[in-house]
Image 1 (spheres, rainbow, N blue to C red):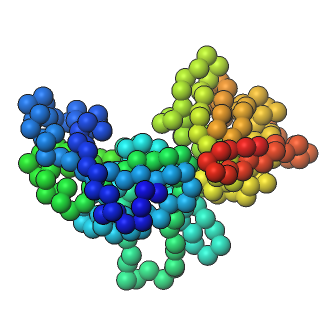
Image 2 (image 1 turned 180 degrees about the vertical axis):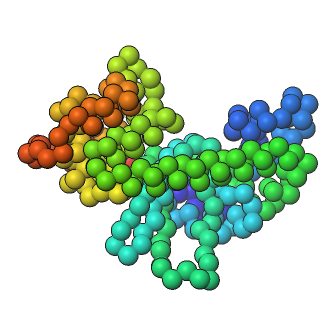
Image 3 (image 1 turned 90 degrees about the vertical axis):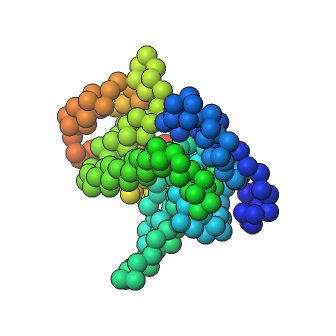
Length: 265
């Protein structure tokens, strides 16, 4: 990270230059005026564990930390189980809320899966953007989008059959991060078997076996940060529906591990 102290380096940027979608919320005349006022402090994080708590504490009642570039894995741990959410460019990270009636203790942590750049949208930023409420509405929509994404992940995790759950997860991620290719979708995300397990609510060895079966069925190929979803989601669902539920264990794919930002099998 650039610094544990968010105030150590006060580097500011014009937010409308850094985020094209926010700029498009305003007409050209408004954009010219707002650009000079809607500024935000920039923060950087290197690949690896991120101590975002000091930055989130400074955000206070502001909109949050806006991820401008990069990919963050947000881990929530309850007891001995960890569930993970992927947060990408344009998403907002906000201070974890605590309720007085919470009986279950949970812990949050953050991992940068590649170098990341944030804009700190704190209370002072919120005051500066007051004359342009369309910016606030756009940021609220992004918060709602993230909540909807979490709802979809919860629904996917309820699918009892792991191969189906994994296919639904990969196609869900491909909707945002995938690229259409002649044979299907190319998904370039640093998805190790361990990370896929945290996203799909499964143990890493089970993920390795499930991926091997999907590979044998000609549905998914690749590994680590280079996945290919062959065909369409409908074809995958039909193929898995026909596949027998009980079969001999398939040869597991080599497990994926991440280290120093590189993903290796």
